[in-house]
Image (cartoon, rainbow, N blue to C red):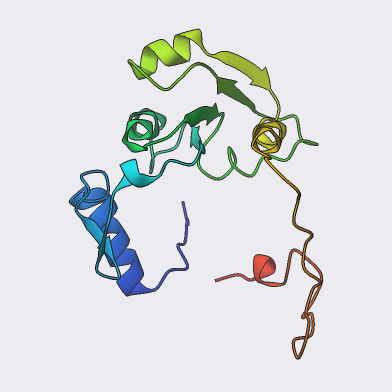
Length: 163
């Protein structure tokens, strides 16, 4: 369905080989810059979003993947697929999302007991990230700066580019 990656061929090949074909990431056998990557070493809280109709990263697989992290995981499943389910702004009450308990046990049991909420998952994520705040917020840097001048206003021109 014309989902272009905009990745270099070498990066795309590495990604597919290590994260899908050989499943090295979840087995702790993937290395970046010569250093092994172990998901259990990730102990910061994780907001793990899946989408119900995603054919690339099926929700059941994302749910199962939550078990590899070393810290708390908030699993959320959005309606639709990997594009519309993620890019679902709050002002468009088009889809829904599900939240539930810890991502443990069978995926089907989690879904059966999850709470369905109409609308975008974005406000849920916002509340979750706000709950993580432990200190003073860092102010956003000024756009541009020193020798760099702003190119254009957000979100940028690249989002309009057709490949």
